[in-house]
Length: 257
Ligand code: SAH
Image (cartoon, rainbow, N blue to C red; front, top):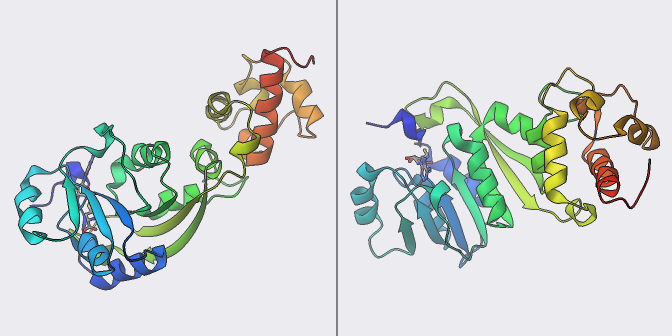
C-alpha cells in the first residue's frame, strides 16, 4: 500500500518518465541524483539512458524490492531521509519526482549541495509559484529565493492519471539551471534572504512597514526609484538585491542615509 505520509504517488506512465529524462538532457555516464526512488520507474528510465544513479528512498517497505529489481545495475541506493543526509556527493544533476509535501526543504537541500542542473516533478501550483511574475498572487518569498539561484523553466505538465494512487493535484516538471547572475552582485546572501522573507511576511503591508526594524528604508526606496508605498510583490529580484545591498552598506557604515 502506498503511503500518504511519504508523499507516495508512483508514476505509472513510462512515457512521462522517458520524456522527463529526455528533456532534462541526461547524458550517458553522468551521475544523477534521484530523491525518492519509489518503485523505480524513473530510476529504470535513467539507467536506460546510461546514467549512473544515486537514489534516496526513505520507505523501508521498498528497500528489498528496489535492491532485487536493480541488482547488478549502475545504481547506488541510499536508504535514508534525504533531508538528514550530510555527506558530500559528486553529482552532475538531479532528476526526481519528489514528495510534494516537502518540496521546499528538498529544493533548499539541493541548492546547498550546489547541484548544477535540477529537473523536478512538483505540484502544478507550486511550479507556478516558482515561475511567478511580479505583482501576481503566486509571487512570493519562495519565488525570489529560487530565482536568485536558479533559472526555472517548465518543460511538461502531467495529469493526475499518470500516477498511482491518483493524487488530488496536477503536476508539472521544471528544469532548473544554477546561475551566478544575481548572487555575484549580492553583498550578503544571508541578509538578502532575511530581507526577502521579512518583506513578504505580511503580504498586504507596505514593504517599509515589514522592514521597520531597518532604518531609512523609505529613503532607500526613494533612492532606488521604488514607490515608498510599494508592497513586496512589486519588487523584482534585482530590486531586492539593490535594497539589501543598501541596507548592508548602512549596517556596516559605509554609506549614510
Ligand atoms: N520517483 C518515484 C516515486 C515518487 S513518490 C516515481 O516517480 O514513481 C515520492 C517518493 O519519495 C516515495 O517513494 C517516498 O517514499 C519517497 N520519500 C518521501 N520522503 C522522502 C525523504 N525524506 N527522503 C527520501 N525519500 C523520500
